[in-house]
Amino acid sequence: MIDPADLRDFICSQGWNQRQEWLEDRLYVLENPAFPRRQLVFPMDKTASDYDECIRRVIGKMGELMRIGPDELLSRMRWLREDVLQFRIVSDHDPVSTLPLGFALSMVNGIQMMLKATACSVVHPRLHHARMVVSPALRLIERTRFNQTQAGSFIMRVSCPIDALEPLDSPDHPLLPEMTQPIPFVRRVTMTLQQGLAQLIEAIELDQVDAWIGSLRQSSRPLVSANLCQALGCFHDSSLDHALSIQFDWSPLQAVAATINNRPLWIRNDDFARIAAIQDQLRQEDTPREERLIGTVEQLNGVMDQEGYRSGEVVVALLLPGGNTVHAKVTLDRNDYAKAYQAHMQHGLYAQISGRLHAGNQPQQITDLTHFELVHPDHFSPCQMTLPAL
Image 1 (cartoon, rainbow, N blue to C red):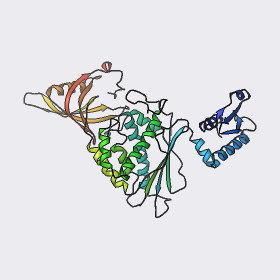
Image 2 (tube, one colour):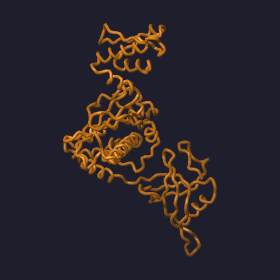
Image 3 (cartoon, one colour):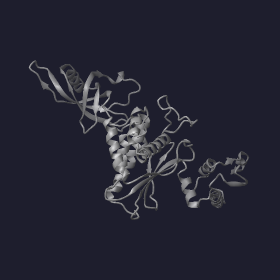
Image 4 (tube, rainbow, N blue to C red):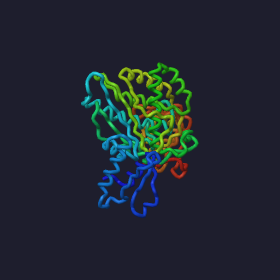
């Protein structure tokens, strides 16, 4: 069931070159300078009468030349267009063949949180993401697939199609110096995750956590966030004496930065407590920034003063990146409260708010209000996304 074009792409990714003159005969013919007297030949069409036989022969030859078994070779071909992340729970005392159900669920949530946190760091680098609702991060989670587990302790695998999202290449997201082609967004996420985890583990092993956190605070593009540390905490169960191994298997269709070491990353059982402490330190660095927010006025909870004017708390539904909304409360003076009343009563009016939105349970809190105005959808700039329905 292997697609001939996929097989051709995989073989080419291993250093083989296609002979163009055989295409008229509907044949893929590939050669490799490292094996001057060997050719790999198979039909371009699955309907060819000897297709299965040719594919078996090619797989056998490739396995022999690469010195790997046919099953491993087929597995690599299957994930040709995807970066695969493998999370392995290992115990020095007892083989891990089962896990507590709650811990297994925590691991799945941790994988999702880890990818979300890293995607947010690629788009908006910071030490803590108060709301991980960046549109590319949400779309990446939608396209990521949970793969079959495999034998060997307890292993979870997820695959991320490298072409699931368009490349992110702008002045704020320059290419890595050693990369000459635009990097797909998904590959940028998986590389950032691998490099961030490697930094974190190295800082712990060298006992240089404080100095490393200091460098993160100074960096304009920190690779590790408090959210990533929180995700790693999902892979720890205090009832198990275990370590975590994380392996990245890159799609051969996209080159990996030369600076990346592809060895498995190991987090020891004792390291989880240190990672939790790092999470707390990075989270302390998070101070709410002033934001310009757009939303609808949902509730008017103000009180009337002696002069007959109302002021006080208002609840608004704010638009977030990715099309989601969050409810927040803000305290308004009499003038801004009158504007809020107008927005609440008149169809088609929205509130534009400048202030600091604090993360937490909804309704969240907006403080340090500097601007509260009414706007009509026709006046929004093109960069603003679809508004919540009135």
